[in-house]
Image (cartoon, rainbow, N blue to C red):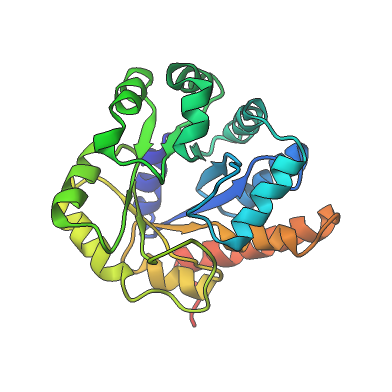
Length: 270
């Protein structure tokens, strides 16, 4: 299924899409594959696989710690692609979330080809904007890959319109100013940002929101106004809290994903 297909299927069920994130190579390559498959089995509709990077300036401390653990373990781009292949084989749309420098170093055309061959759906690129990514846009179009760019509360109407026109799959609305991370309350910036994005973008482009959701009640709150609920730090924390204990972190991931999946279905209340 394509990314847009996953959003359409969720919409047909009258609910939001649950998008889960975990870095490749965390806690190790095989462990990440098993963990992400567990997230899929427990209710994630779309998966973002992080490409660990040595300078994750937009990530909060939880994801930074996970990425550093993966890098210390020797994860390489080929391991990210192997992870994509294993997860995509489940039938769930699988995107890579990455800073641009590793793709540039690997080679844009080469990465697009290898990602497509692995069954990947596309890229989420938090640190480049469409006006500085013409090579990626052309290459993604050539290979039929999704292009997911970010909008933020500080984005002007002009930039939101430009960004959404360039997106395919969905647009990522990051509704917290600053770095990422799980929070105890959701942002009051999220609703207005989604409203602006929908008003200024293509009518059929889904809007996914990432703002630190960490439980089903928060997921339900965001699902009330967004097409997708994106969860990253909470999944990473579930693994970090059970170091060296696969049974522990797989159980924690299952409980968290099931709670979040219930939330996007409106079956969890604060």
